[in-house]
Image (tube, rainbow, N blue to C red; front, side):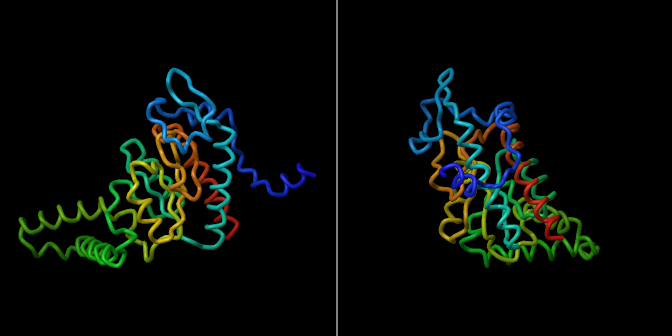
Length: 241
């Protein structure tokens, strides 16, 4: 009877393979001295003074997160991806663009959620300036003035390129490194935005609604998780098409 209940409750099969997870290094945490006590339930042991994450629990939590993401897409809700570590920038950009999602991969701009109306005005200005340049409307200015506009455009692009089509605060946020992008998590919590986040052994998993205990440093680990996210989003969008 217990098995039947477990099967009925079971999250969909997202083709998550423990061996592939291990090869991608999802189980490698930080040095034992850098443990966040709240991550202890997800740790299976240590090796060479490095905590080892229990991949069975990672699989379970990743499936829960993917199930939630699938529901978001089915309900036509907005998910934003945030990952600002140097080694993650391209992965985040590629995932977002392949799934047509808003993203931030440079720096979290304070107020993106908590002061969205002001941020939206800056985004609109960026789009307007970008449009004027494309139409050649900036050519009437002096060379010095055009250089100032170009510099401003580059700065605005770094900040807002990934969210230039964002019309409202998202329903959920996926944070690649919840420790580094803690401001994003803080604003999300204040605005009631659901948080999905990779949580390494030095992080507080309780900051996320859907924590994924895994290595948030290694490109291979983050790539594995983001590819699963992309797969779910793309498959779900195909069903809706």
